[in-house]
Image (cartoon, rainbow, N blue to C red; front, top):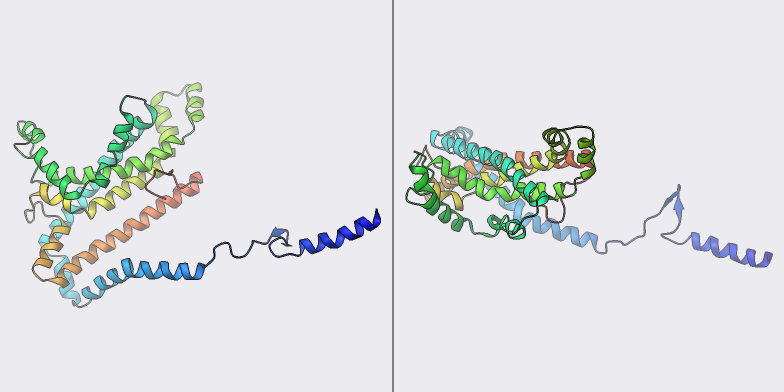
Amino acid sequence: MSSVLSSALPAASATSSEPGTARASGRARPAAGILPGFGLSLGYALLYLSLIVLIPLSGLVFKTLSLSWPAFWATVSDPRVVASYRLTFGAAMLAALINGVFGLIVAWVLVRYPFPGRRLVDALIDLPFALPTAVAGIALTTLYAPNGWIGSALAQIGIKVAFTPLGVVVAMTFIGLPFVVRTVQPVLEEAERELEEAAASLGARRSQTFWRVILPALLPALLTGIALALARAIGEYGSVIFIAGNMPMVSEITPLLIITKLEQFDYAGATAIAVVMLAFSLLLLLAINALQWWQARRFGTAGTGSRGVVR
Protein backbone atom coordinates (compact mmCIF):
# COMPACT_ATOMS: atom_id res chain seq x y z
CA MET A 1 0.00 0.00 0.00
CA SER A 2 2.82 2.40 0.89
CA SER A 3 4.58 1.58 -2.36
CA VAL A 4 1.45 2.47 -4.29
CA LEU A 5 1.15 5.82 -2.46
CA SER A 6 4.84 6.61 -2.96
CA SER A 7 4.58 5.96 -6.68
CA ALA A 8 1.41 8.02 -6.97
CA LEU A 9 2.78 11.10 -5.18
CA PRO A 10 5.56 11.90 -7.70
CA ALA A 11 3.09 11.46 -10.56
CA ALA A 12 0.65 13.85 -8.92
CA SER A 13 3.36 16.42 -8.26
CA ALA A 14 4.59 16.17 -11.84
CA THR A 15 1.07 16.58 -13.14
CA SER A 16 0.49 19.66 -11.00
CA SER A 17 3.66 21.27 -12.33
CA GLU A 18 2.61 21.04 -16.01
CA PRO A 19 1.89 24.34 -17.83
CA GLY A 20 -1.72 25.42 -17.71
CA THR A 21 -2.57 23.39 -14.60
CA ALA A 22 -0.29 24.92 -12.00
CA ARG A 23 -1.80 27.26 -9.46
CA ALA A 24 -0.21 30.50 -8.43
CA SER A 25 -1.63 32.40 -5.46
CA GLY A 26 -4.71 30.18 -5.46
CA ARG A 27 -5.61 31.01 -9.07
CA ALA A 28 -5.41 28.75 -12.11
CA ARG A 29 -2.91 29.85 -14.73
CA PRO A 30 -4.64 30.40 -18.11
CA ALA A 31 -3.62 28.12 -20.92
CA ALA A 32 -1.31 29.74 -23.47
CA GLY A 33 -2.24 30.23 -27.09
CA ILE A 34 -6.01 30.61 -26.72
CA LEU A 35 -6.07 32.97 -29.70
CA PRO A 36 -3.36 31.94 -32.17
CA GLY A 37 -1.98 34.67 -34.36
CA PHE A 38 -3.23 37.48 -32.12
CA GLY A 39 -0.49 39.87 -33.17
CA LEU A 40 -1.12 39.34 -36.87
CA SER A 41 -4.89 39.60 -36.42
CA LEU A 42 -4.58 42.80 -34.38
CA GLY A 43 -2.25 44.35 -36.95
CA TYR A 44 -4.59 43.47 -39.81
CA ALA A 45 -7.59 44.88 -37.89
CA LEU A 46 -5.78 48.16 -37.17
CA LEU A 47 -4.63 48.43 -40.79
CA TYR A 48 -8.15 47.83 -42.09
CA LEU A 49 -9.61 50.31 -39.61
CA SER A 50 -7.03 52.90 -40.62
CA LEU A 51 -7.69 52.50 -44.34
CA ILE A 52 -11.48 52.58 -44.01
CA VAL A 53 -12.04 55.05 -41.16
CA LEU A 54 -9.03 56.84 -39.71
CA ILE A 55 -7.22 57.92 -42.88
CA PRO A 56 -10.36 59.35 -44.61
CA LEU A 57 -11.32 61.24 -41.46
CA SER A 58 -7.77 62.49 -41.07
CA GLY A 59 -7.84 63.71 -44.68
CA LEU A 60 -11.05 65.56 -43.87
CA VAL A 61 -9.39 67.36 -40.98
CA PHE A 62 -6.16 68.07 -42.89
CA LYS A 63 -8.10 69.58 -45.79
CA THR A 64 -9.95 71.83 -43.37
CA LEU A 65 -6.65 72.98 -41.87
CA SER A 66 -5.83 74.63 -45.20
CA LEU A 67 -8.33 77.31 -44.17
CA SER A 68 -7.35 80.05 -41.79
CA TRP A 69 -9.39 80.40 -38.63
CA PRO A 70 -11.32 83.48 -39.90
CA ALA A 71 -12.09 81.68 -43.16
CA PHE A 72 -13.16 78.54 -41.30
CA TRP A 73 -15.40 80.48 -38.95
CA ALA A 74 -16.88 82.48 -41.81
CA THR A 75 -17.72 79.24 -43.61
CA VAL A 76 -19.31 77.36 -40.73
CA SER A 77 -21.17 80.42 -39.37
CA ASP A 78 -22.64 81.60 -42.67
CA PRO A 79 -26.39 82.27 -42.22
CA ARG A 80 -27.28 79.66 -44.83
CA VAL A 81 -25.09 77.06 -43.08
CA VAL A 82 -26.47 77.95 -39.67
CA ALA A 83 -30.01 77.57 -41.03
CA SER A 84 -29.09 74.11 -42.31
CA TYR A 85 -27.67 73.20 -38.88
CA ARG A 86 -30.85 74.37 -37.23
CA LEU A 87 -33.04 72.32 -39.55
CA THR A 88 -30.84 69.20 -39.52
CA PHE A 89 -30.27 68.99 -35.78
CA GLY A 90 -33.74 70.23 -34.84
CA ALA A 91 -35.57 67.86 -37.17
CA ALA A 92 -33.31 64.96 -36.16
CA MET A 93 -33.97 65.60 -32.47
CA LEU A 94 -37.72 65.85 -33.01
CA ALA A 95 -37.74 62.67 -35.11
CA ALA A 96 -35.70 60.82 -32.47
CA LEU A 97 -38.13 61.83 -29.73
CA ILE A 98 -41.09 60.75 -31.84
CA ASN A 99 -39.38 57.42 -32.48
CA GLY A 100 -38.69 57.10 -28.76
CA VAL A 101 -42.41 57.27 -27.97
CA PHE A 102 -43.85 55.27 -30.84
CA GLY A 103 -40.89 52.87 -31.05
CA LEU A 104 -41.55 51.90 -27.44
CA ILE A 105 -45.23 51.36 -28.25
CA VAL A 106 -44.41 49.23 -31.29
CA ALA A 107 -41.91 47.13 -29.33
CA TRP A 108 -44.45 46.69 -26.53
CA VAL A 109 -47.14 45.50 -28.93
CA LEU A 110 -44.80 43.08 -30.69
CA VAL A 111 -43.60 41.53 -27.43
CA ARG A 112 -46.68 41.53 -25.22
CA TYR A 113 -49.61 40.94 -27.58
CA PRO A 114 -50.09 37.96 -29.92
CA PHE A 115 -52.06 38.88 -33.03
CA PRO A 116 -52.39 37.57 -36.59
CA GLY A 117 -49.56 38.76 -38.81
CA ARG A 118 -47.25 39.69 -35.94
CA ARG A 119 -44.24 38.09 -37.62
CA LEU A 120 -44.93 40.07 -40.80
CA VAL A 121 -45.16 43.32 -38.85
CA ASP A 122 -41.99 42.40 -36.98
CA ALA A 123 -40.19 41.84 -40.28
CA LEU A 124 -41.45 45.15 -41.71
CA ILE A 125 -39.71 47.02 -38.89
CA ASP A 126 -36.38 46.29 -40.59
CA LEU A 127 -37.58 47.60 -43.96
CA PRO A 128 -35.87 51.02 -43.59
CA PHE A 129 -32.58 49.17 -43.10
CA ALA A 130 -32.90 47.25 -46.38
CA LEU A 131 -34.72 49.83 -48.50
CA PRO A 132 -32.50 52.18 -50.52
CA THR A 133 -32.85 55.66 -49.11
CA ALA A 134 -33.64 57.17 -52.51
CA VAL A 135 -36.53 54.73 -52.92
CA ALA A 136 -37.79 55.66 -49.47
CA GLY A 137 -37.59 59.35 -50.33
CA ILE A 138 -39.50 58.93 -53.56
CA ALA A 139 -42.16 56.82 -51.84
CA LEU A 140 -42.61 59.34 -49.01
CA THR A 141 -42.81 62.22 -51.48
CA THR A 142 -45.43 60.41 -53.51
CA LEU A 143 -47.54 59.78 -50.43
CA TYR A 144 -47.22 63.20 -48.81
CA ALA A 145 -47.25 65.42 -51.92
CA PRO A 146 -50.28 67.73 -52.20
CA ASN A 147 -51.79 65.31 -54.73
CA GLY A 148 -50.68 62.15 -52.89
CA TRP A 149 -52.82 59.73 -50.94
CA ILE A 150 -51.98 61.16 -47.53
CA GLY A 151 -50.90 64.63 -48.61
CA SER A 152 -54.21 65.40 -50.31
CA ALA A 153 -56.12 64.54 -47.13
CA LEU A 154 -53.79 66.65 -44.99
CA ALA A 155 -54.01 69.54 -47.45
CA GLN A 156 -57.75 69.78 -46.81
CA ILE A 157 -57.04 70.70 -43.19
CA GLY A 158 -54.21 73.06 -44.10
CA ILE A 159 -51.23 70.79 -43.39
CA LYS A 160 -48.51 70.57 -46.01
CA VAL A 161 -45.84 67.91 -45.50
CA ALA A 162 -43.89 67.47 -48.72
CA PHE A 163 -41.34 70.17 -49.62
CA THR A 164 -41.43 71.63 -46.10
CA PRO A 165 -39.38 71.12 -42.90
CA LEU A 166 -42.18 68.84 -41.71
CA GLY A 167 -41.34 66.49 -44.57
CA VAL A 168 -37.74 66.35 -43.29
CA VAL A 169 -39.05 65.22 -39.90
CA VAL A 170 -41.22 62.56 -41.54
CA ALA A 171 -38.30 61.15 -43.54
CA MET A 172 -35.99 61.12 -40.51
CA THR A 173 -38.67 59.43 -38.42
CA PHE A 174 -39.07 56.73 -41.06
CA ILE A 175 -35.40 55.80 -41.17
CA GLY A 176 -34.87 56.01 -37.38
CA LEU A 177 -37.74 53.87 -36.10
CA PRO A 178 -35.95 50.47 -36.34
CA PHE A 179 -33.14 51.64 -34.06
CA VAL A 180 -35.50 52.25 -31.15
CA VAL A 181 -37.60 49.14 -31.69
CA ARG A 182 -34.65 46.77 -32.09
CA THR A 183 -32.92 48.23 -29.05
CA VAL A 184 -35.91 48.11 -26.71
CA GLN A 185 -37.48 44.87 -27.94
CA PRO A 186 -34.88 42.38 -26.58
CA VAL A 187 -34.82 44.10 -23.18
CA LEU A 188 -38.60 43.94 -23.02
CA GLU A 189 -38.53 40.25 -23.95
CA GLU A 190 -36.11 39.51 -21.11
CA ALA A 191 -37.98 41.61 -18.53
CA GLU A 192 -39.07 39.70 -15.44
CA ARG A 193 -42.84 39.36 -15.37
CA GLU A 194 -42.65 38.44 -11.68
CA LEU A 195 -41.90 42.06 -10.81
CA GLU A 196 -45.05 43.21 -12.54
CA GLU A 197 -47.09 40.50 -10.82
CA ALA A 198 -45.61 41.47 -7.47
CA ALA A 199 -46.49 45.12 -8.06
CA ALA A 200 -50.05 44.14 -9.01
CA SER A 201 -50.36 41.95 -5.92
CA LEU A 202 -49.33 44.93 -3.77
CA GLY A 203 -52.17 46.98 -5.20
CA ALA A 204 -50.34 49.00 -7.87
CA ARG A 205 -52.37 50.17 -10.80
CA ARG A 206 -51.25 49.37 -14.35
CA SER A 207 -50.03 52.90 -14.90
CA GLN A 208 -48.01 52.79 -11.66
CA THR A 209 -46.52 49.44 -12.64
CA PHE A 210 -45.45 50.81 -15.99
CA TRP A 211 -43.94 54.07 -14.71
CA ARG A 212 -42.26 52.63 -11.60
CA VAL A 213 -41.35 49.07 -12.58
CA ILE A 214 -41.22 48.62 -16.36
CA LEU A 215 -40.01 52.00 -17.62
CA PRO A 216 -36.97 52.27 -15.28
CA ALA A 217 -35.74 48.92 -16.61
CA LEU A 218 -36.32 49.98 -20.22
CA LEU A 219 -34.99 53.53 -19.89
CA PRO A 220 -31.28 52.84 -20.64
CA ALA A 221 -32.13 50.84 -23.78
CA LEU A 222 -34.72 53.42 -24.81
CA LEU A 223 -32.23 56.28 -24.46
CA THR A 224 -29.65 54.30 -26.43
CA GLY A 225 -32.15 53.70 -29.22
CA ILE A 226 -33.07 57.39 -29.29
CA ALA A 227 -29.39 58.34 -29.52
CA LEU A 228 -28.84 55.89 -32.38
CA ALA A 229 -31.91 57.20 -34.22
CA LEU A 230 -30.65 60.76 -33.70
CA ALA A 231 -27.21 59.93 -35.09
CA ARG A 232 -28.75 58.18 -38.08
CA ALA A 233 -31.09 61.07 -38.83
CA ILE A 234 -28.35 63.70 -38.70
CA GLY A 235 -26.40 62.02 -41.49
CA GLU A 236 -29.41 61.09 -43.61
CA TYR A 237 -29.37 62.35 -47.19
CA GLY A 238 -31.08 60.15 -49.76
CA SER A 239 -34.55 59.92 -48.24
CA VAL A 240 -34.64 63.59 -47.23
CA ILE A 241 -33.67 65.48 -50.38
CA PHE A 242 -36.70 64.24 -52.32
CA ILE A 243 -39.27 65.34 -49.75
CA ALA A 244 -37.50 68.40 -48.30
CA GLY A 245 -37.83 70.80 -51.22
CA ASN A 246 -34.22 71.91 -50.62
CA MET A 247 -35.00 75.62 -50.36
CA PRO A 248 -32.05 77.59 -48.87
CA MET A 249 -32.76 79.01 -45.40
CA VAL A 250 -36.00 76.98 -45.27
CA SER A 251 -35.69 73.26 -46.02
CA GLU A 252 -32.04 72.70 -46.89
CA ILE A 253 -30.24 70.10 -44.76
CA THR A 254 -26.53 70.21 -43.99
CA PRO A 255 -25.53 67.07 -45.99
CA LEU A 256 -27.12 68.63 -49.08
CA LEU A 257 -25.19 71.85 -48.47
CA ILE A 258 -21.96 69.83 -48.34
CA ILE A 259 -22.81 68.24 -51.69
CA THR A 260 -23.58 71.69 -53.11
CA LYS A 261 -20.17 73.02 -52.10
CA LEU A 262 -18.47 69.96 -53.59
CA GLU A 263 -20.26 70.59 -56.88
CA GLN A 264 -18.95 74.16 -56.74
CA PHE A 265 -15.41 72.80 -56.19
CA ASP A 266 -15.29 74.46 -52.77
CA TYR A 267 -13.63 71.45 -51.17
CA ALA A 268 -12.27 73.32 -48.16
CA GLY A 269 -15.68 74.78 -47.41
CA ALA A 270 -17.32 71.39 -47.73
CA THR A 271 -14.80 69.77 -45.39
CA ALA A 272 -15.17 72.62 -42.88
CA ILE A 273 -18.91 71.98 -42.62
CA ALA A 274 -18.25 68.24 -42.52
CA VAL A 275 -15.83 68.68 -39.61
CA VAL A 276 -18.58 70.36 -37.60
CA MET A 277 -20.86 67.42 -38.36
CA LEU A 278 -18.04 65.02 -37.45
CA ALA A 279 -17.50 66.73 -34.11
CA PHE A 280 -21.19 66.44 -33.27
CA SER A 281 -21.18 62.77 -34.35
CA LEU A 282 -18.26 62.05 -32.03
CA LEU A 283 -20.15 63.64 -29.16
CA LEU A 284 -23.13 61.42 -29.99
CA LEU A 285 -20.85 58.38 -30.04
CA LEU A 286 -19.56 59.26 -26.59
CA ALA A 287 -23.14 59.69 -25.38
CA ILE A 288 -24.16 56.30 -26.79
CA ASN A 289 -21.20 54.58 -25.14
CA ALA A 290 -21.97 56.32 -21.86
CA LEU A 291 -25.58 55.09 -22.05
CA GLN A 292 -24.42 51.55 -22.76
CA TRP A 293 -21.97 51.72 -19.85
CA TRP A 294 -24.74 52.96 -17.57
CA GLN A 295 -27.03 50.18 -18.76
CA ALA A 296 -24.41 47.49 -18.22
CA ARG A 297 -23.53 48.89 -14.78
CA ARG A 298 -27.12 49.07 -13.67
CA PHE A 299 -28.47 45.82 -15.10
CA GLY A 300 -25.34 43.77 -15.74
CA THR A 301 -26.12 43.44 -19.46
CA ALA A 302 -25.61 45.38 -22.68
CA GLY A 303 -29.38 45.54 -22.98
CA THR A 304 -29.81 43.70 -26.27
CA GLY A 305 -30.23 40.22 -27.50
CA SER A 306 -29.17 38.54 -30.69
CA ARG A 307 -31.52 40.76 -32.66
CA GLY A 308 -30.48 44.02 -31.08
CA VAL A 309 -28.73 46.87 -32.78
CA VAL A 310 -26.36 47.77 -29.98
CA ARG A 311 -23.86 45.13 -28.95
